[in-house]
Every structure is written in structure tokens, then in C-alpha cells.
Amino acid sequence: MSYAYLFKYIIIGDTGVGKSCLLLQFTDKRFQPVHDLTIGVEFGARMITIDGKQIKLQIWDTAGQEAFRSITRSYYRGAAGALLVYDITRRDTFNHLTTWLEDARQHSNSNMVIMLIGNKSDLESRREVKKEEGEVFAREHGLIFMETSAKTAANVEEAFINTAKEIYEKIQEGVFDINNEANGIKIGPQHSPTSPSSPSGGPGSSPGSGCC
Amino acid sequence: MSYKERLTRLEKLLRVDNLSKRGNTNVGGDSPNTAENQEQDVEETNDSIDLFELKNLVFHGLPGDSQYRALVWRLLLNYLPAKSIKSWDEFLVKKRNNYKHFVNDLLVIGEETRERNFDHPLNPEPDSKWQVFFKDNDVLLQIDKDVRRLCPEISFFQAETAYPNEQVVSGKMDRLHKRVQSVVLESSNVIRKGLGITKINPKGPMNQDGAETGEYHWEVVERILFIYAKLNPGQSYVQGMNEIIGPIYYTLANDPDVTWRENAEADTFYLFTNLMGEIRDFFIRSLDNSVSGIKRMMEMLMDRLKLRDQAVYAHIVKLEIHPQYFAFRWITLLMSQEFALPEVLRIWDSLLSDHKRFDFLIDLASAMIIHIRTELLTGDFPSNMKLLQNYPSIDVRDILTLANSFSTSS
Image (cartoon, rainbow over all chains, first blue to last red; front, side, top):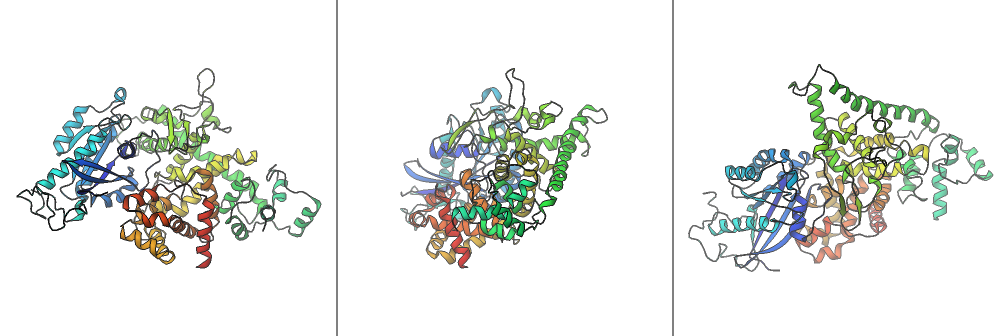
């Protein structure tokens, strides 16, 4: 199927927070309470529509354990978006966010959009991390934030799509160099390679200008 | 060789008659015990097992109804000394006692520490026994979560073992998962990839009064992995080890011979330790360039694929499907996550019988790619990634035969 853009995502966070379940809910619309451990990476893809344009998402789901960190790092480069996931019923997964964020910032391109996700919102009775805490952390670190439930599918679509919207807006603003595939964005085959910037063509679109 | 001939050959190689005389009753069940057979054995009163010939035979599949698998794996993984069957009784007593000491020293001591007063939970000294205890619990928590999701498509690991740890059952030693109970998964139902449904119980087995009695098989696996992690602090526990220990424990705990079966826990520990000794590079030095490292293994896979199927190789390279996207897991876990357990056992018979362990694993991986070449050649990046990461269910004998044709031709 043809598409306007292809965005690459990476999903990161501690083991057992529900990364693979979020991906499965988004790509297959189903929930699997006990998932095989992720060893290395797993891959998923889906088409979404933003602003009337078809956007293909390619998502890399990573292993959460420390021992696999060096592999995960090699996937940051080439990602336009990252979903940083913690488990609202496990305080330790929230406490580790800073480490994850440092890792992500250090190994990704500076424009990568990061969405902070507090997963397992269906388990309200076992909640250990307040929603406000997630919001504060996100604000302090310039992330978008959302609580989701891979089990009930609450906010799962929104999490993936809002991340894409943010990336799309950055493209419109000319922040992303879309000719550089290392940024995790690819222009679809239907688009003329001679006019890589968006049709609306923001005046500030200057490929390779880096961060503003 | 016919099936029957192969079975006879295996029993002869394993010296099944000799084994049953050792007091290990029932090894081999109704093994041929005719006068002719005994005469043949008299000719070879040799006390050793020919490992080379055993590998040659088992490489092509284990004859018999899996009843010899546990014994064969004990030999292939260099646990039982093949050179001297006579020494086995003494050897096994020693090893199993050693394991018992590990359990006592590493698990029971922790109990005493909590009761003594010289140390306390807020003691910040890194060598405080409490600090060690807390650090151990991080590892334990990880193991606990992983063993609970071990092979959910079969009910075995969620079933009760007939041979629990006596100290646990009598209440002298806490259940390991009690140490990390507050954070344990509360999954009531477990589903995996449409293969079947099993239930997970957060607690140990209970009697009618609701008191916990025996132990589940996963609790046994949890103990082995925790002891391994304690004894190998440099490596500790890495996710995926649960998938490696699973087939070993399953095989040993299902041995038809009760004298072997009741020692499944201790023997699994040693088999797992030996196997990890050979594949540890896959786990810790994940991205290095050493000869046995995972990166080198993946390079070998692509080199061999290029030689054997230029078209598929070129297509995969063109699509930028790198081996680390799929073969990392294949190789690290010795295919244990790619197929259902019975197929994994069959594959491991060959992998463990490989004279150049684990070279055949690379041939097998390339055979898996070539086996689905038609689909791959017409597929794009996402569809091929899905295919390679969710390998279709096939008759594994097809890929084993294909892989074998490579290794014999090269």
C-alpha cells in the first residue's frame, strides 16, 4: 500500500511493563496476558491516517532487561518516535525512567519525539504511581504523557497516533530532515523525491538545520 | 537402518543391560534381555559409552519413545562420565549432595540472617547481609516473573511436582517467591499464541484447608535459576535462561525411570550449568566480535545463506533485514522460542549431538530461511519480518534434513 510517510518507533522501558502487549494491541487489536519474553527485538507495523495522509508506522519493541541494553541502544538511531513505558502498579519502573531517558537522549537524534506512557491503567486498585506524578515527570522533561491499558485498549490508539501527530507537525515545521533516513522518517514512494518537504511547504523548512 | 535397528543400536550404545544391573531399575523399560543379547554384551565388557557413536546416532533423531532422552542429554552435556559407567552411582551421589548444600547454604542461611540482631535492614554497608538479601531479591523478582510464563501452552510447569523440596514443604524454608510476593504478577489466565490455555496460580499448591503443601514445577525451576545466579554473580540471571532451562527440566522431570526422575532438580542444575558454560557468550557479551559471540554467529549465518541461496540472501539484504532482527533470538535461545516444546526437544537432540557444537545451529538457521524462500522472495520488509519473527509451524524434520544436507555437503 502506498503511503505519504513512514515513521519508525521504538518502545522502551523496564521488563514486564507491557511493551509487547501495547504493540500487539495496536497492531492486532488483541491482548495476551502472558507474552513470551522479548529477546532482542520484535517488530510490528500498521497504517494510520493523519491530516488525510496515510502514514506507515514501523515499530520496534525491545527487551527490557539491563543485559540487553546494548542491543536496544542500536535501535535508537533511526527512530523518529519513542514510547517510554512504565507500569503504574510498580513504583520501581517509574523510578527507572530517568535512566531510560538519559539513554534515549544520548543515543537518538535530538528531534526524536518521546511519549511517556503509564501502562496498566485498568489496575487502579494496585496503583503505586499517581497520574499527576507521570504528568509532572513528562512536563519536566518535555515529553508527551498518557496513561494506557493494553488490556482494555484504553488510549492505546491515541498513544501511537498522538506521537505520530507530533512527528508530523515537526516535519511541517521543517524541524526534521526528512532526507536523512537516520531520523526514522521516510517519504512514501508516491511523493516526488524532488519536493521532499510537505505539500504545505512551511517557509522555515530547511533540511539539516538540526534543532531549533 | 530401520527404526527398530536404530533403537537396538541406541540401547547397545547406552549399555542398557549394564545400566539396569546398576540398580537403576526400569531404564529402558522392557529392554531385550535375551540370552543372545547378553552374550553380545559379554563380548564388550567395556565399561564406557562411545560418545562419538552416540552423537552420530542421536543426531538423526532419538530412537524410542523419548524414554532415553534424559539419559542421553546427561551424556551429551558431559554430566555423566561416559568413560566409566561403574563410577556413576558414586558420582551422582556426590553431585546431588553438592546441590543440596548449595540450596542449604544459599537459601536457608538467608532465613537465619533475618532472625539475628547483629545486622538490620537499614544497615547501609554493601556487605551487610541485608543488602545482599535485597539485591538478591531484585534478581529473584525477575526470575519469578519469567518462570511463571514458562511454556504456557502446556500445563506441565503449572502442575505439582512429586519431588518437592522437603524443607519448603515442611515450612522450614520459605518459598522463594514469598520473598518478592508483593510485586508478583496476578495473572489468573495465561494464553499463548493460540497454542492452548493454561492457568497460572500465584500461590503454591494447596490442600483442602487452603494451606500450601507441595511445590509446582515452576517453583523448582525458580530455585535452580536463583542458585545458578547466586553462584555465577558475573552473569547472574539473564532473561532467556528460563527458556534454556525449560526443555532440560521438562525432559529430566519426565524420565520414565523414577530413580532418575526424582533427582531431576539437582541434575537439571548441572546440565544447565554445563550448557550455559558453552553458550554464555550469547548471553553476556551480546554484541562482541569474539569467535563464539552472537555477532560472529550471525555473520556466519549470512555467509552461509549467501553460498546456499543467493536469491534469498540478496533479497533480504536489499530489504535491509539484518540478522539481529530475527536470528539473534533463534541463536541465543537455541530455537526454543520458535517452536512448540516437542519440536524443540527433537531439534535439541540434533543440536546437542553436533560434533562441532553449535555449528549445526547455523546450518539449521539458514535452512529455516531457505525453507520459506518462496514467501520471503515475494514479501516486503514488514511481511518478511513478521514471517521470520513468527516462524510458521512446520514439520521440523524438513528443516533438519535440509540443514543436514548443507553440513554434509560442505
